[in-house]
Length: 560
Image (tube, rainbow, N blue to C red; front, top):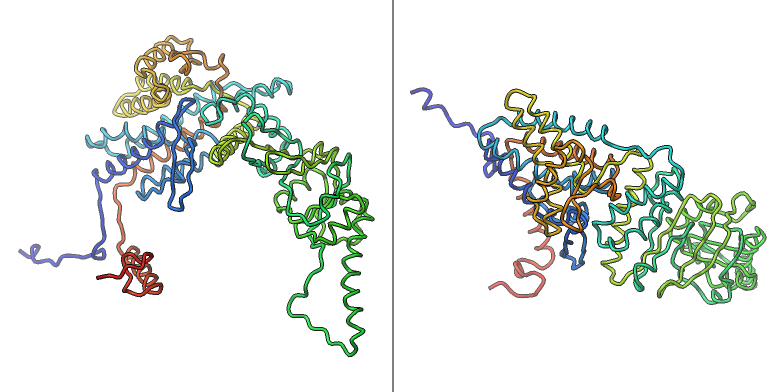
């Protein structure tokens, strides 16, 4: 009786939404599967593209997993984890973003029946971690090193890795053309890790084949004043002066005030101003530089002054481009024109201003330190060029990773099938429930070749059976999906390669995400933050137009 009269304990605020237990885990798995389904069709060379239209009205066409995941406005808290792993895969290795989301979704899908049957999530997590550890060790065992090869051999191997990445992109039709361009760009920056040393400039018009690589720096012609057209537009072995100062008459700042006792003194002040600017320009000319670039404005007086002395100048050059010119030419950006010595001047073999489409580009070729490169991209529509830039970013990242971690594995679903076979065999040696869990992990890995077939319009069951048979025979470890004929082929012999680090990272991230989602058994949604947001929005609306226009504030319709 006493137990029945105990007061009810209210622990959480009224309106708090809590859901827990098995139903919560299953709900999280369903949400993640739905996200994986959104990018499922973009995998592989025959993957479809997604057109995403945001509230600002801008349109993005992409089949890059990370880009799509960023643009999808996902609100489900568990599904956001998949967005994070796609981003981490993109920043770490650059490619395999769709793969990582698909794998995580498939691991969870395979875990769902076990959860519904009452298996404790921790048992699944333990088995998944073991399976992931075994799979990664197997990848390291299978991987082939490209170390110790000559530069020409290395170039062709890296170009094949880049071509594998580009084959699934919008510019896949020209993958050989772009792959060699990407390899040259990455080799140009050497061991430097900064990606911004490879510039990508976009010029609408022309076709993809009109794109070209500059072994140095190229940037769009900046805003120019009268006199610019009289300047020479081509130099051989010029000296380059880089500045971060204005070369123009400036109005005084901070309300400077000069008091005169005699009107004649006014002229001396005007003369002093002119003398200062002429003194600066004179020092620039005496430095021996034939090209003057500044991050700030170079005015009409300076432009004409330089034109009379056969010197090329460009003002308002963006900081990124100026730093890349400094890195390439060996110059140093100066904040003063006093005692400019030879050591701070840069140099290059050829400088020219060239017309590319409707734009004019300043191009520095044959730079001595050669620590930078620029890819000028051409194409029809803006969205197309944007997607081409994203594709090249992926390829650049892959080539950099392959240079650093010089081991490669066969692509086209071959490595996934081999891991699946290996884990199935290993599972048979284990007694207990974990045999089933590792088996389901092995089955989940088959999602990559299956999806490659589905996206190309082939019968995935038929192709997977052929692949299983080939891998089980013991000599087909390199066999994957042949995307052109719908059969199977040796991916290694067909040069469908990818860096081992891509697969290792993808399996690691996907397993971690799946384990994290499986380990969540309760979600508590606090009402306070929502009401606070609601109040803030209401206050903002009241401030704009008063309560009379609430509801359709922007259209001026009175509330009845």
